[in-house]
Amino acid sequence: MRATLSTVSPRVLRAVAALLFVVGHFLPWALHSTAALTQSAHDLTISTHFTPGAGIFANQWFLVPVWAAALIIAGYASRAEMGREAAESGLIRVVLALPGVLVLVLALGIASLGLPTYPQVLTAYRTPDYQAQFLITLAVMAGVIGVTLLPTWRLGALRRFAPVLLAVLAVLSAVSLVGYVMIKPAIEALYGDSLGVGLGWWVTLTAIMALLVAAARASATIMHSSIHSSMRSSSGEASHAA
Image (cartoon, rainbow, N blue to C red; front, top):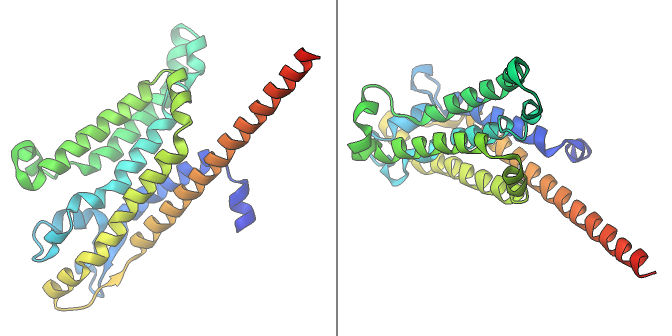
């Protein structure tokens, strides 16, 4: 397993993490023997508003993994990733740009999962219970568009900070895992029964681990590239001096 992970590129690991974040969001987290009482992370973003004692943990944290997934996926829709169309013109350019547009739509759709449900979304901007969730979701959607529109040279500069950014997304997403453990007693008190830790929680944990491995791999790649460039520069200076 360790050897396999060491051969997987950060790009693939990011995609796997994003997929697992979305899947884990809809799989059971609060596992109950009665299916109707089992809740996914998406359910928890709603129910924590109305569960006595669950207010110790902000419901927005359960949305962080899908927000992270949206930002990760946006990177695949960027002009640098899908940038071959820049060298083309006319219909060919439009056709080559389509995959990037579709990925952008997908990323925006995933980010929009953070919007409050109808009809709360209509007044969310001025309702304290939903205001933060609404505004953060809009900010993430703006971030998705921003990442997509970044010119190639700016995205290249951003890649230097990729390990840190990926690690931050992983750590922030992990807060939701801790949050479920924190509010679990409150839900159990409401149900009058015990709860388990569902598959969605474990899938999200797996996604976080994949993202941390991607961060480590990206850091190693950047470090190796930096050392290689430094060695080439030193070799060139020595040859010039000779």
